[in-house]
Image (cartoon, rainbow, N blue to C red; front, top):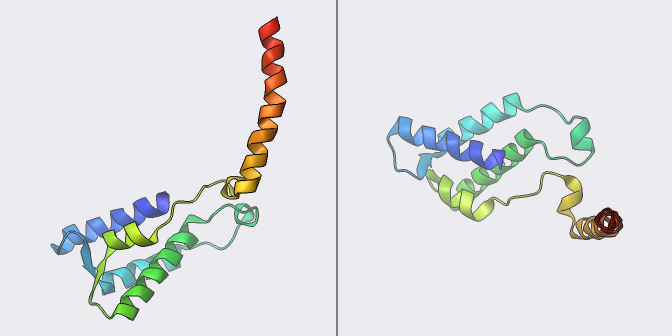
Length: 124
């Protein structure tokens, strides 16, 4: 969610500064933002090795995908709101919840563990 917020917040500021259409910006601004994120991107750390997402790496991949789409369609403006709607996907932060089987097993095991505890407490 932070990637989406930063993506939209930056481009909304750019549209206000440039006084352009509310959902279109020049591709040069997109490339400048990508270069800025590339400079501040940190390398993989311990949490990335555990399966957690690195927000700067995710933002960089979104920007690269956006630039590729702009170059393939040969347009001079980037429609950031359309890109946000059609190409961004929300993912869970915790790596274990992203997989459906693991989350189902976690929920079932919690049910079997917590049910006897709750019923024992109710009888007291």
